[in-house]
Image 1 (cartoon, rainbow, N blue to C red):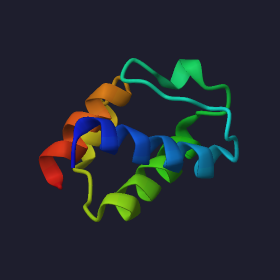
Image 2: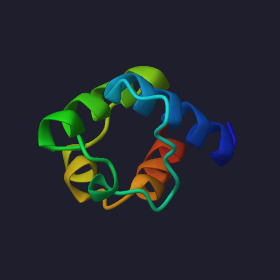
Image 3: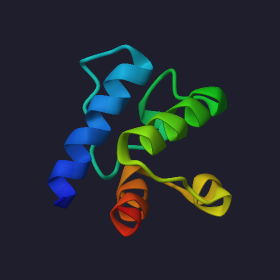
Length: 79
């Protein structure tokens, strides 16, 4: 799976989790860029990403992610 394909799938998950098809995440997107992205939504997002890609994040990765690009790095390493 290419990085672009991963990003497209991540965008689909964001649309589902936030119930907003207008969200378009990029590698530099952070929680500050999406109004409803709080700690509870972060956990939901992580869980849905895990389901979509079939792997589990390590806790250190979950708390250390600074942006979507870092999330893509972790996904790419685990699929």
